[in-house]
Length: 406
Ligand code: UTP
Image (cartoon, rainbow, N blue to C red):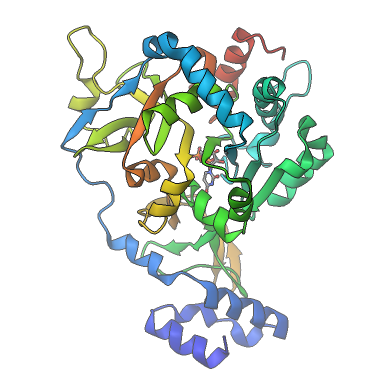
């Protein structure tokens, strides 16, 4: 894009300030800035005027494969799941593009050492969990790892330096998630440098579109992969490509499925898988009306009790069919470093918005979702914080309980 065009283009969108320092820039810097401007998704900014959370009214509990159902049909589920794995119809996607700000660790979260007397990174622990399945099938499914432009280099190097934790390197495919601009509360896009527009990773809902933009769908098509097991980096007890989960999902004929755990109390901060107007939906803890969160069945169990663990299976055909069904943007209020009066400032308090789409919203687009219950003490140990709930401390305790030597 040429300077004159950028000037008109920005002035029509109320963003002329992005060229404020243009005269001071070198030729190379000007090129970078004009390129950023050309590639910006300005339409995302309109979202700041939209009402964020809609009131949830017509919620119902979702039909669920409970622990009891699964115990009864485990052999059947596993037989189907192993067959799918042996026929190479399943791949996995690790979501590792987050910033892990609550943990306060300055490297990618997966590099965090969860060990006590030995080094055991979160990445290594999760790769060990994968071995449970690959040792049995003797087949290595493709593992796609989504990083962000901020943590890609460190992540790729860490895997390489650790010899991919014993996984064949040609089965590991990294890709960088797409970005959206960051702006102030009035919608003015920030400059990160005088010659760079401020951008941030577009949330974990960007995992499939970013995978396609990175050209990795070619691998999925070439290998005939039908299901993708998408999981977060946080959970150190995560079971990946779990055959029974795959089998139950395939047999359910749903377009996707989610591993869920029973909530420990109405206030637990997890998204709950529900049904709304006959469609699956994940209601975040802050969107759930308190009277529904507390509601109990006659047997004392919470009516809306199944919290999601960020472990999903998505059918690839259904993903392709819904790809252009737009995911809503969520506004994350953040402290965003930016250029102000010619110098870089790093605010302490939130000063603007980042725009994120969320994987939980994909479930609704998919139209049908099997809730698949797992034992929380065996499969749910998220590392969000250093101490307290969902922390390094709680995850270590659960790892030990599951026989992992730390
Ligand atoms: P979280 O919602 O916990 O966000 O991510 P976060 O950025 O990692 O952590 P906080 O909120 O700053 O403390 C849940 C999962 O989604 C991935 C994370 O890496 C994690 O596996 N994620 C999140 C992405 O891959 N990309 C994103 O843009 C955001």
